[in-house]
Image (tube, rainbow, N blue to C red; front, side):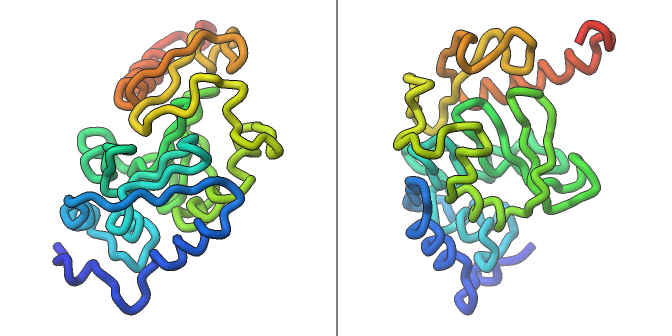
Length: 223
């Protein structure tokens, strides 16, 4: 296990690059101050600050993109109380949850459980309830998330100044997301017609796992 001094890279740290991306972003980007427990988070991850993943975990409490539409996990903050280390405890087996969104979607770094492409990002989409390969690594994901391509990914209007008009409940605190019923992955579900309520992200994650298992156990013609 590497020590904190071995994980802190002073020669080629990634955080200046992340700050540059944030300053040049197409969308609002808020780099939250790091928590007092950032050293423990970095030690748990065992990733150096030369990598964007380690830099964000150590130098930020997390990142809120586009008013909090997307939440990239760091060491934790009042606006995003989950830190990337404790959030993954008991959840991730063969992947690392690194970000999530207000629609109840989750982004994970594949450690081998999601496919043969280790180190690539996957998205657990609320519209399908399946892990979808994004075919990019973590560094490219962060850079991409700061651009207008993020809104295109969600099918939102790039000219919308806030992007929240279609969902008046937004923005939400960083530990809440919207839960839709009928579910978005069902034929009856949609952003426009489903009822919605704000629930803890933890509750949405547990619900997703439960629904995934029920779908796997259901006969093919009943799915």
